[in-house]
Image (cartoon, rainbow over all chains, first blue to last red; front, side, top):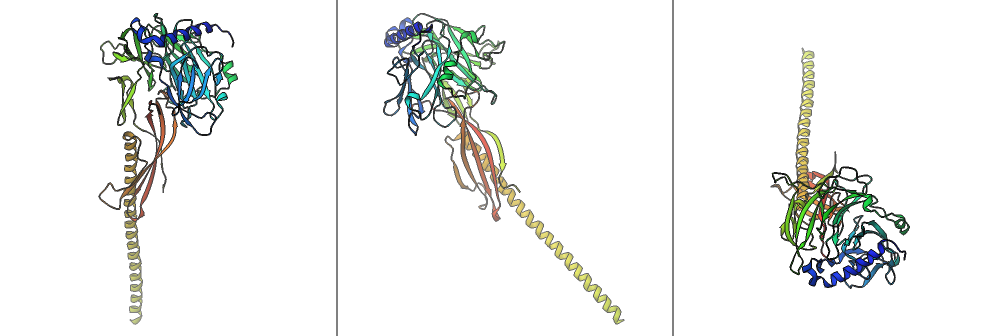
Length: 351
Length: 140
């Protein structure tokens, strides 16, 4: 394994996180992240070394950091770490993964083709999945963005990936929205990133991943404040500081607007998972916060609430409308219109 | 005298023949026009049924989840001879631009609506539709 600058930080992250998750209930009162944020396994459909698809669960952990298990039998199907005995080894995988996992079905065939995963060292990984290949060759991947910067902050909430709004762009890219959370008891200056994957539908070989230079903060445009608008092109993405607020829940993007939850680490209620949070919404293209039309001053549309840490937005469908909920609270900014839209028309028995 | 009356009878016969031919032609035209009008009216009724079927398919895609893929023969009007049949064919699924991958999927549908009326009048309309579908996030 190659020695690299992030290695010591990664080891520190693993040790800190392991201790953190193991002792979280007792430490919740001193502001540490509750154990409920360790991350639930993510359902996916895979085809590893066999002709038929199989339901599976993707989960993060300490050793191995990434693992895919059979959803029915819990038998391990694939695992990844920096050294054996995992099924596949990735030199840079020296930090733990928690709940920042997102498998994606790129072609709509029901089988997941890509995984984006954020580790506790503040790096975003990208994996391409090769259907039918044996477990030892099933995934190719590497660090897509290294945003560690030496601070004790990492990714706990899953990344949110979306194509840009406004129809198919050529060339298309993925907007990857994700925010950091502190992984120790000390407050850190968190960040919210919107990264751009300019090769959204390309399947990369391992050699291609090894040639890829991970995006860093220096490649991104820094916004002067969270919710400020981009003043220049940001081909690789942008970011802003969000102070001590942790990103513990996944962002939800609807019609090009990302609705996100900023949890206040100083407002953890009891030893449970209740945190005070602010829900905000931004335009992913520009980073600009959505304005509250109802307010006289037209300030950013923000909503304060008490929520279970790690809760994600749910959609309550009522006919062709889906109400966006966070726990029991209705979040209007991510309501969705599900009405079908006509695309083409033909008359088959034309005279 | 005989010659003159024979000539008149001949002309009368020719005149009667011409009138008969003209009458027949008018009758034929009237009957043909009536037939055309009836056929057109029935085809319009069939077209109306087919358009109603397309709207019915759109409403199904708006409300029901999952939609009914084949409605069977429906008789929405008073006339038993008028019927419609709506078939929904799910097509390709793809990532909808501007929406979270893994939380939403856009699925294409074909609404094939067949409207029928009396005398075999039949119209088929096919409407392409795309629908945004939220994905379940629960474990399989």
